[in-house]
Length: 118
Image (cartoon, rainbow, N blue to C red; front, top):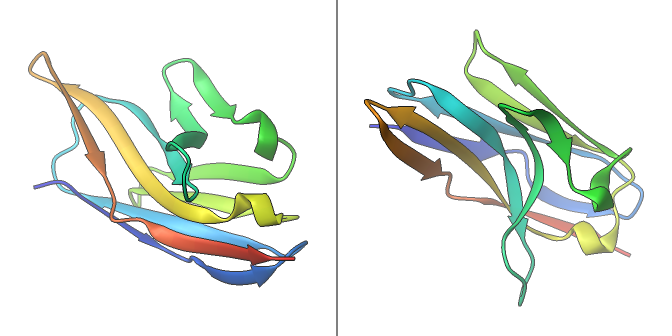
């Protein structure tokens, strides 16, 4: 059973930093993408940063402020968030996608709340 467990969310003032971490466990053959999404109240879930077959990518709104990193030995993917803004507030979710015996799969973590106060 695949599990994604996020940690590191919290409350921070604008301009501050947070580091999110996602630990992946279980069978995860042939990963095609791994990344972080966020969902603000009233908004759709959006990709913040991720690794895919095309490389590393970031949402325009976080470029230059957020950095995604991956440790394959520890099966973790982290999101370093600097110069946080109130509009970065939301629930952040870890996500993986892959293919196993020709079938695509996708898993989500439970989410971690990030609140940036002005």
